[in-house]
Image (cartoon, rainbow, N blue to C red; front, side, top):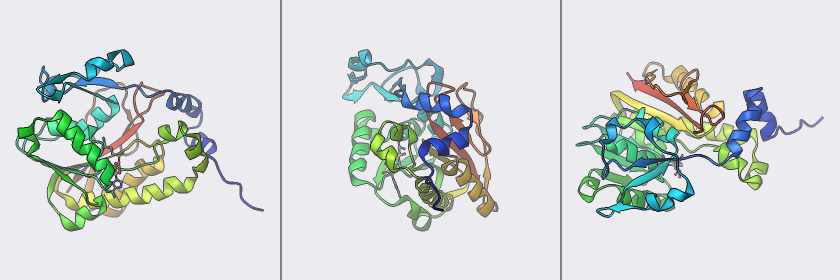
Length: 287
Ligand SMILES: C[S@@+](CC[C@H](N)C(=O)[O-])C[C@H]1O[C@@H](n2cnc3c(N)ncnc32)[C@H](O)[C@@H]1O
């Protein structure tokens, strides 16, 4: 007898059990975003501002978020979960940083806030999305500081071969299933199958292996996705630790934020427990 195809609902009900009903409702609600002052034009200093201080974005505040100062946008609107994830890389002032999958560039802005002398390479494979990334950098970062940002257009999975042992910090914010987006697009949801998450997980693993090769010894990698599928999250890290444990260890950051839940190999922020996410991230140290 032909095996019946498992659908999205069945798959995630199995993964999340009783939690799924609440989580799927939360994912169907519009995502809540916060307004963060652009650290390059606004005070107080970006590094001291607590993530709990940011107000939620509402359409009434749209005029405010369009405000400019010296030609730069004064605020950016972002999911708080993305801010926490990018901060977990703990970029230092003189680091050489790679944002391997960078467009549209929200996390690049957070990474660059901590770089006073170092360089940031923002890589993005898609030409159209690379253009968005360039616009974001131009809108938020002063011209004299943009000289330390380099936009690249390579396949991230090739960095390890082309630039081995090069970067102090690497963010791999990998392309993923993006289930929240799927739940808002019935046609896309219809096409979903478990093969999708399996295929993406293989791609994510190759990006992460490339990052491991491209990272200097003693450097850090943050791997992240906005997927709720453990196959694209903890399972990718587990595979790396199993296969490359001689070269890499888990190095969990200390994060004091009520929204953050620990998973076996990383952390997640899910919208049923907080008003943010979904996001998964895991920090690794290259031996
Ligand atoms: C999750 S999004 C990144 C979001 C971004 N980090 C941010 O915070 O704004 C993943 C990006 O990776 C890009 N991408 C997909 N495959 C890639 C590859 N092999 N190398 C580099 N970038 C890739 C996609 O086009 C997409 O823009």
